[in-house]
Structure formats: structure tokens, C-alpha cells
Image (tube, rainbow, N blue to C red; front, side, top):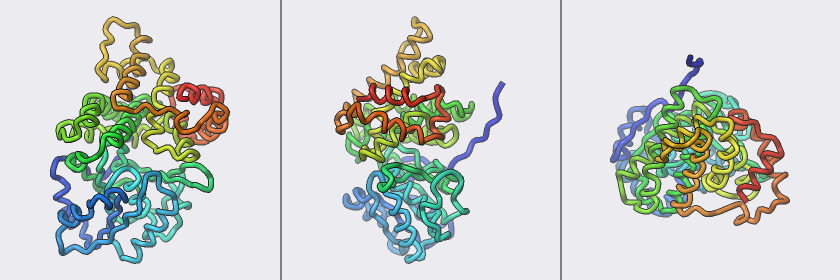
Length: 384
């Protein structure tokens, strides 16, 4: 018997090759004329501003905020909101990876309210609807274009915190696989495994529903089938399309079922050691899965089969643990071999990391197996 559940997401999703060229029509549909473009600094330096200018034409006046770098600091949201107010922006368009989209969502919420970004941290702290938003991912990874979260580094506290509110759901997610073709192999791999994290965590979350599970499981299959090709043959548009669709589905699963202990244990790695989010999740994914398998044998066996493993002659336990091997193989095939020791993390650091991880409570509440301080220390040991 199915439990009660709700399912939410971005108000509109448009997917397809060439869809970015329709951006002016979408801006017009919101009856807005002064867009603020929030852009990854790397994209700006690579000349993406010209691509955007070409897409919207010469008649539309826009302001460009292109200071976003990976793992953005919270102060950037306040700075961007002040910038939006100075330019009288009436819509915010985030273009890039998760960092750019998270900053864009925060700016849109902050600009009309004149609140400070710190006021919105936590769950349901956003005061009300902000400026309309359009999110345009250029990576197949975070799913931020369909989530209600914006995550930031607080360097003074050596931690990451997020704004989480239905008011942060984008009004339009515009996904064009052609925009992901130029992404280099390294970022393709780390963002792709980040999407796999979202899919596996949301599928195994105790908050999952039949509807979220459908999207999460489809995401696992799409990512397993396409990520290797995207990493090693980045111009393959069919694979890029499959990966972007997988990332989208994983984002929908994440938005409705939440993530689990992978994110709780990876957040301190970013906040304290500056390890990029996708890579931190990559390092922690298999160790957390191995810890969780005994609590959800059936689901992990399904993950193994969905990733292409043959489980017919295996016991349920063997099939479930095969999912961990499948993930480890995918990570290795994508050239991601980093471990915690590569970032100067030592065994004596584990307890401090574990205590910080246990403060990231919402993902731990979704985890299929309770995580104690001793468990967290042991999992970090497996990732050393």
C-alpha cells in the first residue's frame, strides 16, 4: 500500500537541443525586459557572454554578474542582490553549474526583500516570492535547475549551509544538451558522479515516494549508460543528451526525497578543506553505500541491476553489494581516483570531520541506516 506523498519541482521544464536559442521568447513570456545574468566566471572568461548576447539579440538591455566561482561564499549572494537592485533587474537568469544557479536563486529571493542572505539560511526562512527565475545548466550534475536549495560556503565558520524554500524553485528550467558539449572531461566526470549521488541517495532515502523513486531510478540508468562516453567522447551529443536528462531526473528525485549521509559527510570536506562539492561526493559515495547496503538490500540490488550488473545467480546480499562495485568501477573509468589523503586529510582529522557531519542533520534523517559518531569516523576511514 502506497504511503501519502507530494511531488514538487520547477514550475516549467523545457528540454532539448537548441532550446537555449528560445530564451528571448521565455523572457518575453514573463513580461520582463531587464534581465540579470548570473554567470560562472569561467564561462564569462571563455566568451559565453557573446553566446548569450547573440541568443537574446541587441534590443534587450541586460546586466551581467559574472563573479561566481565554485563553492561560492555567502557574501556573494548579498553582493549580487545589491547589484540587481542597482540595475533595476526584473528577472534573474542563472547560467552555468550549480554554483551559478544557486547564487542566481538566492539573488532573486533577496533582491526585492532587502534581507541579508544569512537570514534565509535553513528551512523555510525565505520571506516570500522573489524575482522570476530561469535556470540554464551547462553541466549535467547538480540538478539545481529544479531544486529549492541554494548552498554556500561560510568561511568564517568553516562550513557549508543552504537556503531551502519552495520560493527558490525556478520558474523555468531550460536545458539544452548542446551547452554541455564543451565541458572538459574532469568537470564532466565530477558533475556526473554528483548527479549519480543525487539519484542513488534520493532512491534509497527513507523519504522516497513511488513517484520520486521512478525519477531516481531512471536517472541511475541514464547516468550509468552515458557518463563514460561523455567523459571520453565529449562531443557525442546523444550521450550528452542522456546525461543531462539523467541529471534532471536526479534533481527531481533529490528535490522530493532529499539526499542522505553522502552529503552530510561531504559538506565538511568542502567547508573545511575546500574540496569541490562534486569531488567530495565522489569520494564519499561508495563508502557510504557500503555502510547503507545492509539496511536496504532490495533497493541496492535494484541499483546494481539498473547499472548493468548481472544479478540473476546471486543472493540478495551479493547483488546489493555489487552496486558498490558498479559505482567504484564507474568512478575509476571516469578517471576519478582522488581519496581523502590526497587533500592532506589524516586519520586524526576524522573525529572533527565526523562531528561536523553530524550537524548536517536533514540528510542524516533521510539515511536508511542510523549514523553514529563512530560510524562517521569509520566511513571517513574507508575513504582515506
